[in-house]
Image (cartoon, rainbow, N blue to C red; front, side):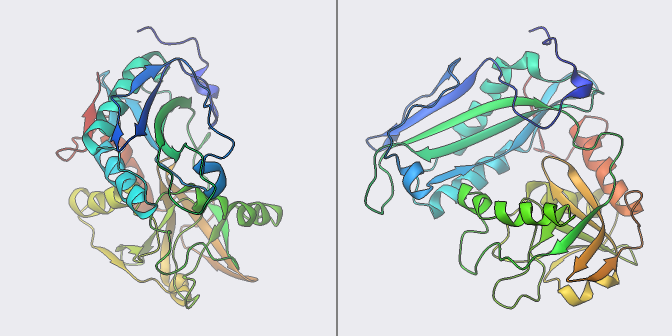
Length: 341
């Protein structure tokens, strides 16, 4: 399939309609085989479960063109597993994990012309999602569901280089103990919208959420896990049952240990110790790592030694190594790369 006539260098991170999307329906206790369709609209009852009680979950991953010209996805099996965990928590039927990966492959193949070329800095973003589709007026799980995947080409998250951001310690809570913070549900992101708009209005790029029980421990932002580097180059990530298990973060910890020979640690990270770290970053699919230069805790500035001009040296090595694996410049651990073409 020929590449579409798109100005790859000037793509933003937004929705661009592509040719095909995958749709599968759950009814009478079973999933159908699913189809690829050109129809980009969703028609549901005004009383659909998703509209009444927010019964929806989603995932996000990317397809890349590697240095040798292949089109690949990065660890889609982990997205399938995480979606399954999200479904179980919201009493939704699990979409089979092997069929999830197959559907991702089919959808990318059907939109191959939208996969940006190697070296453009752009990628094809893939959004699988599921929602309750039949009418539900009493508070209970839906009986019918729809699983869909659409794709959209997106530009590089950082145009002109990754500049460290400034974040604040938020007065809002992101997730309660034993709540839904560990799953990728739409409701978690809805509750973060007011907090992020408020942060932007006050000059901050993001929020740092603390644990709701004690408000002493670092959890995550509205859509990314934290990663810290100590002054002796140990890579540390917060441990909590109420944060989303980021695939990017888990991969970076393996990269740190196995590729860079660094000591890694997943543990509780306390607000009072942030000034002891040399570097800080936010891990996620969109940017891989967003460097953090400064955290503001109610007027108190916590500045990292890496500064406000560029990524810290360890963060940069982590970023370069993981993107090198994704783009085929470095050999990947077994099972990390799903070749689509």
